Image (cartoon, rainbow, N blue to C red):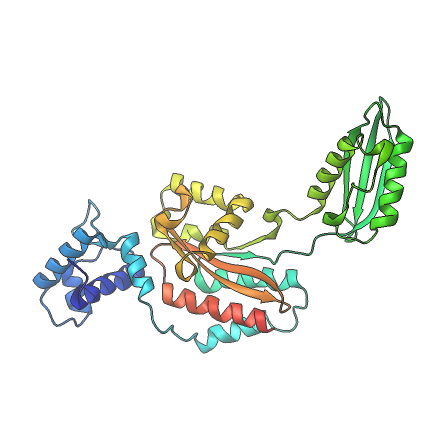
Length: 334
């Protein structure tokens, strides 16, 4: 049994009605609100078939149906032309994201804030990956007990320190010599290009501990994934009737606090069909009743980032897709 045109009309009517009301939809409601040209009894039969096919679900406390994740996916995949933004929405985007915001940080923070206001959902902005930091200064400072502090300064002024236990066969003077060479050879060079193969002969087998310290310093200087996440309207989830359950709400808010998880979640959504993850398509159990819609943008014509909206599966998909498309184009062309 497939989804013929009438079943499709019934399913889409239920999806649209449930998105607006958050209440299970019955056959009489569909017959009254949508001109499908068939009786409530016929609609009821079609709803039973759609439930059997997995496109609808029936809550225990209601005779009406609600869309399943599969039903939403069928609906989303069938979306054709997108609605135009209202003139007020387009004006707000141009006003708040226009030329006065010169810096990337200000632009993307404003984007997250504006999207959360326009949608009443939670917005997520993943900022573009930055160029790897460059070495400005490497210094070693002796401590007691055959230890030293290795300090590294990057070209953007960030400082990282690592305490190193100096191997018995390596002196502090040896470390100072290594630092002096690296400062000379690799000044203003990307950190990932620093090579230790240059140290041959007497020091080649004795700088493993120093290399490990350098790896740790470089990792500390480079931006973590979590630093690239900007949230807007994280508490908007409180406004959704699906999440009145306190335990369920807390679980979602805990996920939003873990920016590394949010980063990976958006990257997963961006790889899904039409950049939309619906319900169980999300990898995290806490978000099985949420959908994430993601669009890609370019900043400065080169750097690529993502903007997303997270909300209930009962989401206004065409409007949100249209809004994200408009905003991503606006940022990319600014």
